[in-house]
Length: 262
Image 1: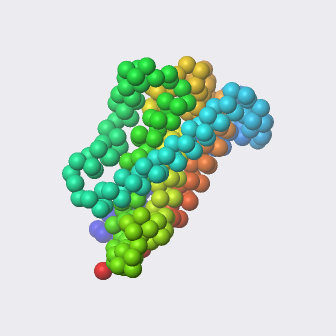
Image 2: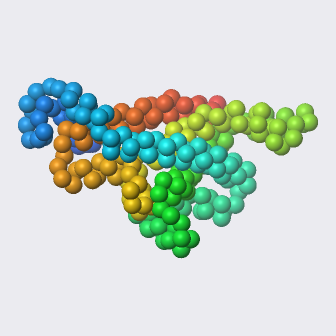
Image 3: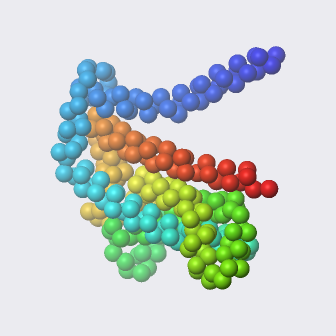
């Protein structure tokens, strides 16, 4: 009976992983299809990648996504690190609610509320408004990672620095910050990934003429899913996976530090 349950669990897991990853494999494979239609496989080609890198609209969208992603990740990392430090140091009920609410509520609600906020301020929608929206959305994710890193940190090291005459800023800069740096970097990579992949919030906060990669891909698939769309999706997928791998290489230190804490 136990072996039967294990077999059923493995079969269910196999179907689950196939449902999640098989469409991604199909997108990657058909990005090399030598046909404008994705109905059937014709042959192998790299022409769609050449077409992609010669597409000025796609290059502009990629540049906008990179600029917004870098700005959003940089600012949200600083603010998220401060928020995570504050949530760990001061145990209040209000602060976690304020920081983590943008994560809990649906993205469409965040996008609509930010759009209304910008309209009330008479703020011109564009790259700046999208970057501000992404910063507000990513702060909570960075704060969670930093807070988890600080939960596994040995507080006696900071106290020892203070006993040796260090100011609170010096103790944070020379002791706390190096110890939580893996969490800070992982949070920054997560913020960049969320920003460059975001569609819903960007759709509401981007003005006319402001295009990012997700918006450009959406405008292309409304006509037809060509292999060029598969090519840009493949590159975006590879970038996202690379950042996830880097973040996962850094985040295990969170678990190791928690396991070593008595």
